[in-house]
Amino acid sequence: MRTFLIALVTVIWASAAFAEETEPAQAEPPMTFERLAAIVTALDPEAVARGAALEFSLADIPIIVIADPRADRMRAMVPIASAQGLTEADLMRMMQANFDSALDARYAVAHGRLWGVFIHPLSPLEKDQFLSGLVQTITVARTYGTAYTGGGAVFGGGDSNRIYRELLESLRKKGEAL
Image 1 (cartoon, one colour):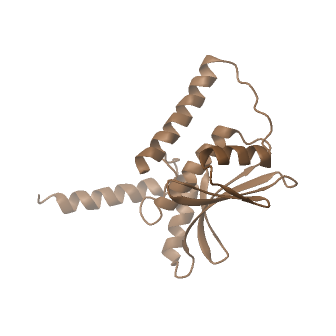
Image 2 (image 1 turned 90 degrees about the horizontal axis):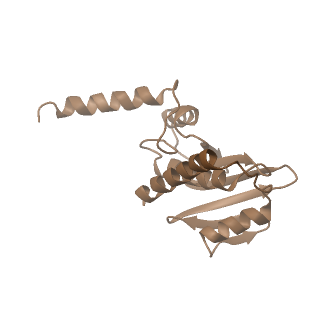
């Protein structure tokens, strides 16, 4: 399933890049709750609307999307784990990932739970941005405790590259005798 998510992100990004190169950009209509609901329902026909919230699943991951048109904001959230027992090291690692490897998704704590979230202004949100944000949010949830990433890229200047290099070097040293 992870391969599916990576492939989906790649197709979305490649499609957007190709479209920009081959034809003039056509503005999408502003995102509304109704349009968001139509996109979500296309992704999961069993999606349920509860007031300003949409509840659905992708790749067996539960997702909640909340939109507030008056504040012009939307939030896609994936529950990860209970926040009880998170250590200082856990919190530090998530903050590092928020800086350089979670991409547009973020780790967040609310109501005693650890979440993966994608937050964006509602009206300028484009369909492909929303889809990419969903994939990144699912990916930060799935990679919690391991890679802490929203996808295939790491924004430079942060701590994650050093952490990954140290892990790689550690593994290389363990494997030297083989």
